[in-house]
Image 1 (cartoon, rainbow, N blue to C red):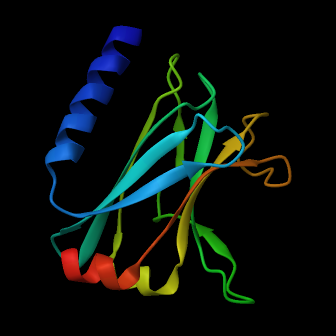
Image 2 (tube, rainbow, N blue to C red):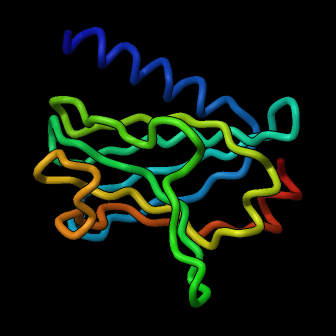
Image 3 (tube, helix red, strand yellow):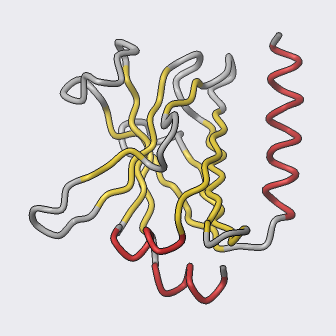
Length: 144
């Protein structure tokens, strides 16, 4: 199983590295070793694809991905409309991919990855900010 996950992660990374798009660096918050990137690419039907590739995470742990608007009263939302959760592998690597409407980017300032130590993604009080990166809407629009 670990070999299959490693092969899938390597393939996903290779595809991500070749994809043209805007790259957002994700920096560690709770763990200094946590790093990653989100590659944002235009795809069909007015959508963008976000691929997150992260390392230095807690092994075999649960994470969720969020889009954040820092303006008062705007709040936060799980990214996309499906499963916003991923699990890290035994080496602390994680990969996530989602498609969202292109016009949604203008509403959000940053992307965050939260760790859920108790594996309950609905318990946001216990969640820990693990990775964060600024979304530059104008850059995303120019490149994507």
